[in-house]
Amino acid sequence: MYTSLNQSQLKKLRMWKHCKIIYRNVPGSQLWIGRKLTVGRTLNQQLQIGDTSTPRKDEKWQQARPYGEIPGPSSLRMLSFFMPGGALRNTNLIQMNRRMREMYGDIYCIPGMMGKPNVVFTYNPEDFELTYRNEGVWPIRIGLESLSYYRKTHRPDIFKGVGGLVSDQGQEWADIRNKVNPVLLKVQSVRQNLPQIDEISKEFIDKLETQRNPETHTLSTDFHNQLKMWAFESISLVALNTRMGLLTDNPDPSADRLAKHMGDFFNYSFQYDVQPSIWTFYKTAGFRKFLKTYDDITEITSNYIETAMERFGNDEDRKTKCVLEQLLELNKKVAVTMVMDMLMAGIDTTSSACLTILYHLARNPSKQENLRRELLRIMPSPKDSLTDVNTKNMPYLRACIKEGLRITSITPGNFRITPKDLVLSGYQVPRGTGVLMGVLELSNSDNYFAQSSDFIPERWLKTDLAPDILACPAARTRNPFVYLPFGFGPRSCIGKRIAELEIETLLARLLRNYKVSWLPETPMEYESTIVLSPCGDIRFKLEPVGDSM
Image (cartoon, rainbow, N blue to C red):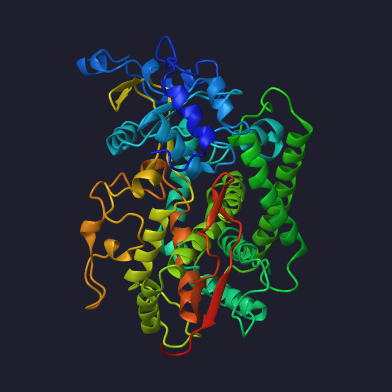
C-alpha cells in the first residue's frame, strides 16, 4: 500500500497507525458560520438562500457515524506532512490525494488552516452522486477568493458588483450563468469559430517547422510554452474576436504583456488561493503585486474590448455575431468579466490537457496510427481545411481525447459545498461542509475501468470502426459519476465546448502532419498550480507525414 513512500515516511505512518484518532467536535450543523464567502455573506446566509430545509433527524442520519469520527489528520499533523521528510513534501495534487487515501482510506477530512475550511475527501461514486443530486439549482463552489476581493472590494469602480462565474454564488451566480449559457454552450455559437481556430492551428504547425531540426526531428524550443501561446491565441480569438499575433515573430506588444501577466496570475493564484495564506488578514507586499497583476490584466483586456466594439460599430453588415458581441449585448459588465475569466481559464487548462493527450498518443504508437488513418480520410492532404462537414465524423479522435483526460485530467476532483445534511460513506456530513470528489483516482482504478493504466480509446467507441478497431464499452464504467472531466450539473465547465473545439482542431493538425514520439525515458511529470500542469523534461520527436501512410 505504501510502496510510493520512503523509509522515513513509512516509519512515521507506522507510528501514527498506533495513535489515537483526534476527532473534530463540531457542534451544530454549520462548519463555517463566521467565515466570509466571496459574495460578501457568511456561509450561513448563503445556505439559507440555497436551501431552507430543517436539520435531518431521519433514521439514516441518526444511524450514521458522527462527522467528528471521519478519519483524518489534526492540523498539526497536516502541517508536519509538508515539513522536510513529511509524507506530502514536494508532492503535486495527484500524489497528495493518492498518499492521503493510502493513509486514511476512501473518506477523510483535511482540517482547515489559515482561514481555509475543512474539506471532506471522498472516493466513493455513490457519495459523488448524492452530493451532486443535492447541490440545488445554485451549487456552491468556493472559487478564487482573491479574484472576488479584487473585483468586489478593490475595484468596484470597474466591476460594479459583478464577481463572475468563478467566484459568485447563489442568485448572483445564477443571473450570470443563465445569461451566458446560450452564448457559450450553444454548439453553433462556438463552432462558427472553427475556420479561424483551424487557421491558428495551421500557423502553429508552420511555426513548429521553423523550430524543428530536419535531421533529428526534435524542436529547438520549449514545446509547452509554444502550446500556451497557441492556446492564448485561440481563446483570444473566441473571447476578444482579436488575433494577437503570438505565433508570429512580431506579436502585439499588449498581447505579449498580457501573456506574461496571465502566467503570473496562475502562480500568484496558487500561492494565495490554494495554499494557506494570511492575505485575508494582512495584505502582504506579494499580495499587493498580485493586485497589480489583476490591474494590468483588467486594463489590457478592457482596451481590447473597446477596440473590438469600435470594429463592430463599423461593420454592421455581418451575418453572424461573435461570442464577444453576443456577450456585450447581454451586459457590458458581464462581458468584461466573462472575457477576463475566459482568458484566465483558457490558457494553462487547454494547453495542459492538449499536451497530456499528445503524450499518451506518443507513448502508444499503435493507437496513434489508428487515429492517423481517421485523419487521412478527412484530410487527404496536410493542407486541407477542417470544416463542419468533415469534423462531424471523428469518433476515434474524440475517444483519444476522452481516454487521455481519463488517465490524467487537469484537476484531481470536483468540489462542492453541501447545502444539506448528507450521509456520505456512512458518516454524517453537515450542511456547509466542503466536499472534494476524487474522480481522477477512480478513473485510474481497475474497479471502474478495465486495464485502467493502459491507454485504450476503444473503450469510448460506440461502434466498431474497422476490423482492427473494435468498440470495447465493457472496458469502461457504467457509473456516470466516475468520469467527469468538465464537472456535472448547473455548475459544470462553461468553457467545455470551446476547449473541445480547440483541442480537437490542434490534435487533428498535429497528428495529421507528424508521427509523434516521446523522447524522455521517464513519464510526464506534473506540478500543481490551480490546475495540474506538465513540467520537467518535455521533448517530442516530430517526423513529418506525407499524403499517405
